[in-house]
Image (cartoon, rainbow over all chains, first blue to last red; front, top):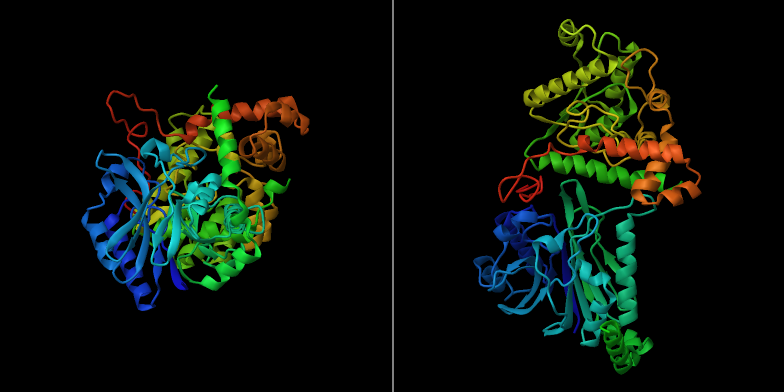
Length: 282
Length: 273
């Protein structure tokens, strides 16, 4: 089906869950009024990014009042949001949830926690262990959190699992001011476009803005069509609300025109990966 | 070298946004900075004026009796060009009064004392105006340690600390810093005729190329030699960087507990902001 998605390019406050919740509710209310079907927030939208030792303080259980409130709101609009999740066994995850019809349809825990350069996620957070596509009222989807998308296998698995829409929640720090556009923006745009094109999937990319300890988050949230074309893109470095209209006909036509995914040979891939795994363990 | 050519439009947007965001998020509207008449503080004044509005920026020129009178003229010119408040506070009385007790002090001690005197004036005016102190040290001098610890290196936030001197020149051009300030030779203005490049023994353009290759691109010593840098130059700069590293860190704390500040008590500075 055709649907409208809102990408909420917000500026969360570091470690202030209540303030961020208020900001998020306000964006949800606006998207409901605008008759959007789905609203997507960035990675760690409820908490901010450079949390360090704040992680356990801002973590939420899936039955916490804030998540219950979001569940309630999902009666009117589907919601995707990033936060720190505390598990039953006191694991802290960089997680995202897909909510619709007052329930959590899917939970994704970030698998690839970057710990290089300015990143230090794996010091503070536990690693997720799965990529799974899931069915929603808007079609079959897959969720990725920021660094996840830089691993080709993650998007590949989701596409092979039947996802036609890939949602990527991001808190991407901007670096590189030598060229015509921000270096990080350029590489992300290449990544989302290439991923969409190779897998004949739509990509909904939602990135935050604002500064934390001098680091800027560059925004540029966008909808990339299954042909790898940026259909709509948010402002660079400024708060924005991006509205994307996703047309089912366009997806169908693209998959007819360029049936790469249909021709993908899962059997060959699995056999070769098994061989590589076996050889590596010798 | 292409890596030292910046997209000034983008750089301006990021740095103006940085000053605005980091000042406003602590519940403050104003900034205060020392305006020396040189290009680094001129650029910060321009960035702050654009970020906070010129009326919310206080620039203070703090000359010593031996300072070149042209420095104050240039500082005034910069303040007029970007419209910020301007005042002059001489540091001669306090510096001279101190060194009356230590008449044999050398140039380094005197220069450091002057830089720290200026720091106390800026932080006092920070309380007076309810303004954050904006730093004006660039990446070249921070990496070389060419600055006074707790003196000119002290600030609440620094918009140009990740910009090499080469970038400072480019962005100053783009933002309309007065020509006289861009074109004059950089100087700490501690004694007559002093210039940074003479004192350091190399030009900023040359050292920026080396630092950029060594720090940002992480070229090995072998690769740097192949790129045409001499062994002596590489070693000198590497040692300067290493020996000044203490200036870029907080004082070391002796660890005795499970959670020691900075070691395993880790929070962002923007905690709760």
